[in-house]
Structures are given as C-alpha cells and as structure tokens.
Length: 61
Image 1 (cartoon, rainbow, N blue to C red):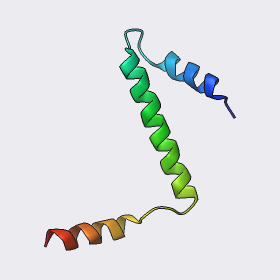
Image 2: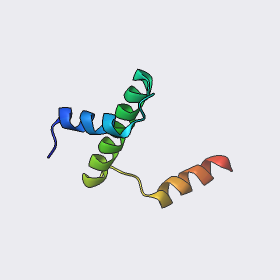
Image 3: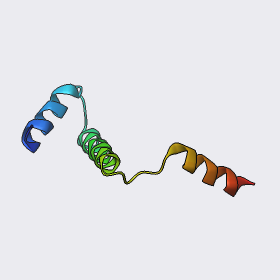
Image 4: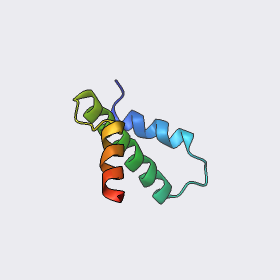
C-alpha cells in the first residue's frame, strides 16, 4: 500500500509539466471522491441503478 506522499508523487508524475496548482488540487479531489465511492460500494452503502432510475422516472411524471 502506497503512502499518501507516494500517491501524490505518482499523481504529479502523470500530470503535464504545465499543470497548475488548480489542476493538482482537482486531481486530488477526484481521486478522493472515487476512493470514497469505492469504499461505500464495498460497504454496501450504494443505491442500485435500477432504483435510481425508478425514482427519477417517478419524479418526472
């Protein structure tokens, strides 16, 4: 398992040389959101697509 410092270094290595601090912050934000979503999925804290679709369709009628 990588340390946070190693993860940031890897992220920086994949960004173009002209990346801004905002680009770096955005990439960290997206990575965090994805990791939280995956954790929620592992813990069963998700709503199946079929249920979301049903709720949406019920709302639009």
